[in-house]
Length: 234
Image (cartoon, rainbow, N blue to C red; front, top):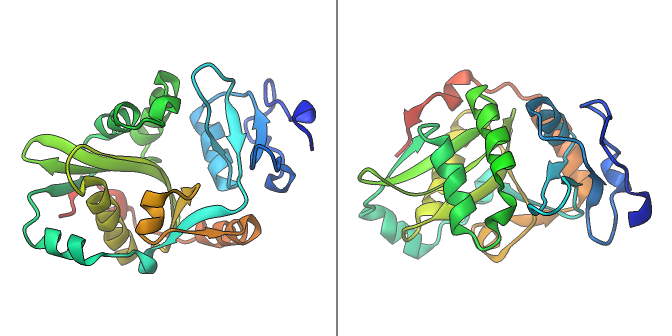
């Protein structure tokens, strides 16, 4: 497929996505454009291993990169410095207490976070209100120090973005999520595209075909609703 023949999702059924195997090699993983960010379309996309990523001036762009960055929960790398930090950690961690605060934090504190537009924030907040998206908040007192958000599909958590306003806050968010999710049968974090930060925490690249195979299995795993109830985790 070439860019000139990139499928357009405008006026297409919500569940209509091209096969991830047809994604472009350059730019790597670009699959389609257009459509909208309705909750049902987002759910259909993530269930197929597809996610939106675009700048405010662009149409909605849909991606399924090869390779795919993943973090097997049991492979989370807990450094010695982080172990020392945890002994006197000044933070506490909650689940699903301030989704909007987390996604707005991600949008405002990342140099590459401009893709989290008002449209994206509204779409994900709707998913959160429906119980289909989740946030982990790291607090220092009453101040939101960091966090992450994403979508749970059975035994897979699709991580979207994380942020940190204080030392080690995003690391603690991910560590706490991994420990909590594993306790309910969770197995894998989808990190989408590998970067130095997630790689330092244990994420690695997986061929897209293998990721899609794992996606089929993991999203059918039954996870207790108690996993995603509003609660304190740390």
